[in-house]
Image 1 (cartoon, rainbow, N blue to C red):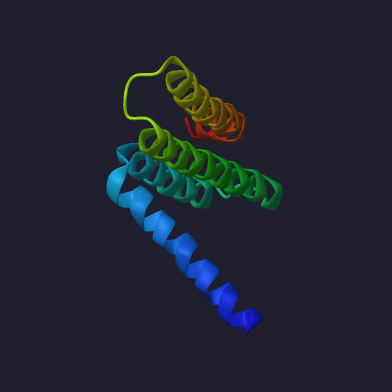
Image 2 (image 1 turned 120 degrees about the horizontal axis):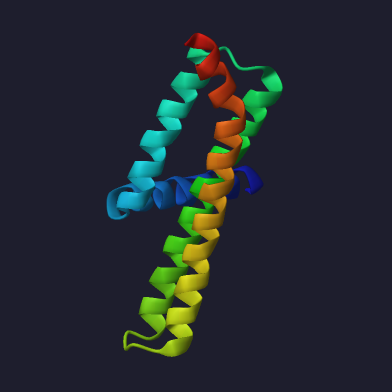
Length: 120
């Protein structure tokens, strides 16, 4: 019974990923950038620790986007009218994605820019 519940939980999570892919342009863009970064990591032969950082930050950004999407959906369900509290909640959730993306950009810059300059 416990295994069956775990399988259902994974199905729910995969369904959430499908929803994010279908409904969120930002999620698609972040996946595209992640694929590009993974290719670049392979091409530039980054170290195992750098791989760990890259994978961690990709997961962090995608998770932040999924949470942001879920929170926006919940806010829209609770109150469709313009409400200052709902706007604040949505802005804070969007800020979380921006912060995660900025961290990803900084980490990517630290890892990839020196290697790209070495190729020139």
